[in-house]
Structures are given as C-alpha cells and as structure tokens.
Length: 424
Image 1 (cartoon, rainbow, N blue to C red):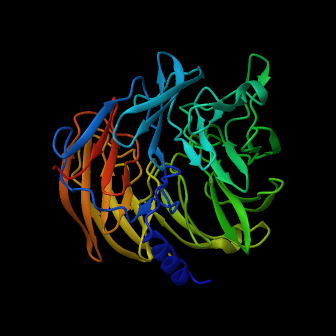
Image 2 (cartoon, helix red, strand yellow; image 1 turned 90 degrees about the vertical axis):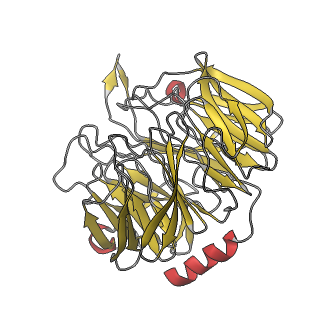
Image 3 (cartoon, rainbow, N blue to C red; image 1 turned 120 degrees about the vertical axis):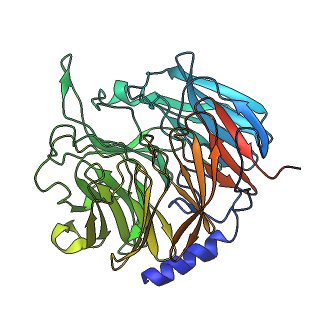
C-alpha cells in the first residue's frame, strides 16, 4: 500500500467520529482528528461550557470512553485517577498508591496519560505504579514496576504512557544502567496481560547510548510493517520494531547520535504514517523519516530524508495531508513532505520566553498549539502555511495536549480542566 493510499484511508476512517479518545495521540494515533466543531476563540471564562478543578498536580492528557472522561493527578501525595461525566460532574476517584513528586519546573508525578478500552482504564505514574480500573471504578489489578523489576534512574519525570494492542499492555522503560544503593537500573520493554496484569514477556533494550542519552520519555506506537503488527519503540538513540508475541527486536535503526553526544535524552515521540516513522532527535537538532522494513540492522538503507535545525525537543510531530507538521519548542511550525522531505512551508507563532511543551493537535483544517504560559493558539492551515485565528489566554500553564471531542475542546491547565464549546 502506498503512502497516498494510507493517507486516504486515514482521512476516510476519521470522518466517522468515534465516541472514544483512547490515548493522548487521539483516535488516529497521530495527533489528528475530525472532531472540529469547537469555537476558535475562548478563554478561561469565554465559551466555557464547564470547568472543574483537578486536585493535585498532573500534566496528563484526558482519555474519553463513551460518556466518561478519565484524568490523573497526584493528590495529597497519592497517585489518583478521576472519572468525570462529560457534563463535568465527578463520577468517582481512585487512589493507586504513594506518588513521587516532579523534578522539572513543569513536571509532575502524573505526566503519563491514561489509556482506555472497552474493559477499563489503564494508568501509569512516575512512582512506577501501573494499574487497571473498570469503568465503574473497581480496581482490577495493580503493580509497581520499581518493586517488581528495576529502580528508576531517569534524570527527569516519567513521560511514557502505556500502549494497548493484541490483549496486551506495553510499557517501555528506557534509562541509564546506573546503580543506586546496591540496586541496578534496567532498561527494557514489557508486555503484560491487559486483563490480569501478569507478565507475558520482558526484553532488554540496551543500545549503548551515552550518559543521559539513555533516558527516553517517549511513548511507543503500534504499526504494520511488512504485513506484521509491531511495537515501534523510539529512544536511547535507536528506533526499533518488536514482535508483539515475544518482544524480540525484528529490526533496529540507529545513527541518531553519530558523535555519541551525552545528554541527548529523548522527549518528543515519533509519529507513524503507513510504514514511515517521523523521528525527532538530538534535543531539537534534527528530524528524520525512516522507512520501516526488513530485519536486523536497517540503518544504512532506511533513511528517506533528514533535516537539521528544525526538530522539536518536546512536542511530538503530527500529520496533515501528505506532510508531517513539526512544532518546535519556540513555536516554529514546518510542513515537510513525508516521502520527499521537501519543506512545503514554514511559519512561526509569536515568540516569547515561554515554550511549547504540549504536542499540537490537527483538528480538521485547524491546528491547536499550547504555550506553557497558558496561551492556546488556534491556527488555520493552508498549503502556504498557518493563519493565527486566535490567541486564547487560559490564565495558567498548559502542558497537556488538548482534546477535541465532538463539538467540544478539553483543555487542561495547571489546576483546572476546561470544556470549551459554543456559548448558548
């Protein structure tokens, strides 16, 4: 199947608006959606259908299943899951265990986003607590990966979210092989039975990356490569495709740090369209497109293109038409043709000292970009670039990726979840 056919199928499928927003990347797993009926102009008081304070600290993106919205925070020192009706009323909350405070000024112990399916909601925290709850709030299973497998040695706050596929929940733990108090930190990929939490497989993922370049805060993706569903993992200077059945690496791709830099930790996740992976790397140094195919080390034959000096450090790239859209931390937006690597256009949002940490969302022909001072930009997209339709001040930091759903937009700030919609 060609890239053109893949894009057509994605667009066709997205016209049927799903009632579910199962993960932070959205229904298409690439930060795109056709849920586009929300207003472009709003604030923390204008076009607000409802708002609710989310106690504690958290930057996770909400997940939605049917009539319930799920969101996490660390409340009173405890990892906590909240379930809300779509009218903003709390249904229930659940305490998972003692949490761990954030280290970065904008980080928290509840950075990873919930994932949902028809059987329940799955949550993960910096404390390494991983749990599943039913949609009615019953705990189904719970475990702590630090206690069962390895201490945490990442320098900053956990960022990776769980991934669901094939009856399994996948977690990537990529960190330095350090020792602390006589314990050794492991770096690995793990698959658990989604209904019981029991281990199905666990494989090491040691890449030989330099100090802190081992640390990755990215979320894996599932993709079909050479006719086979694979878990695609990005981090520690390597992109790799893993068997869902046993976790073994089918292929690996390197050369993302040829001079072996220290401190090239990986925050921005990869984006996949068909069998092409868009990979930001080097703390904003570059972005590359990788043709995923083959077995073993595919480094020498896999690169479609690579562009320096426009890569994001934190926001994950998205997709529009036949281009990947890259938002840098400083607000520069670049559209790059997925197959050729040609730059279609480049635009920039108003620049301040503040950064863009949230990943952008493409909603129909609009793009939503959140700056960490609480400014939410809604931009129109065209073949020539962007048009800033509105600058919306939410009054406090916005780090979480926003969620367009039906005719609403859900925006999480440092303390509050806002439901944005047309004023009656």
